[in-house]
Length: 252
Image 1 (cartoon, rainbow, N blue to C red):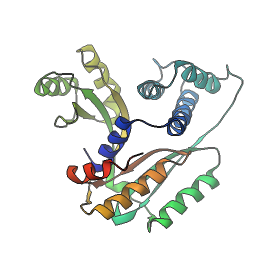
Image 2: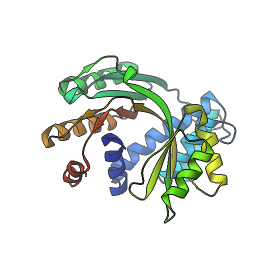
Image 3: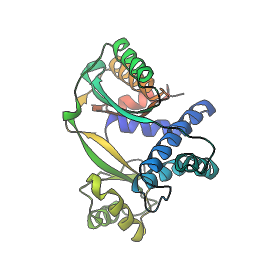
Image 4: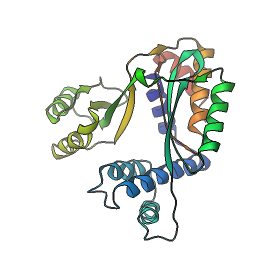
């Protein structure tokens, strides 16, 4: 698991305060609205909406909020919102490559905010997507089961890669088009996913081993993630477990 993924997992496990949770719900709502607009309001027949709804549920978003977001997208609700999906790429501290996926109703505001964060961190906007590839990621809790057994089940379901056990779970990697098929096959075999999502995974990685540099990189990523218009941030840095543990106490 990359340093960025592991750090995000630590933050989820420690929980978020009300302000952070409210911001998360806003991002989840935007994803649900956009997915429903592009497809339909039926999560069973709309693959992207299904992923968005599952992610919302995994983050304890109330069912009423999810329903209201779908209604706003399909026209059965009173509100109407339209978001544009824009991706930004660049280099952050320590030459870390970053892809920022946004949904915005004001592209000028979003571009200005993201450019400011890159500039203040000593980075720059530049093409970096060649250092990433799209993948599907499924997190499977072990729940006391034999990791080898779960790994074999994932391979049988069509996984292209399975991680070593970590934090009581394994991460199953799939080709993007196979994500839902593999998730359904695992569910049918009795292995329910904690999460399933499309991601941009790095093909090259930058090792970050100094505490000051690691802190600068993580603060840069968190400033991006805190922007209302930012849905996901993908980065190619790796931080050793021991150093991550040192930094964990600083998570609010």
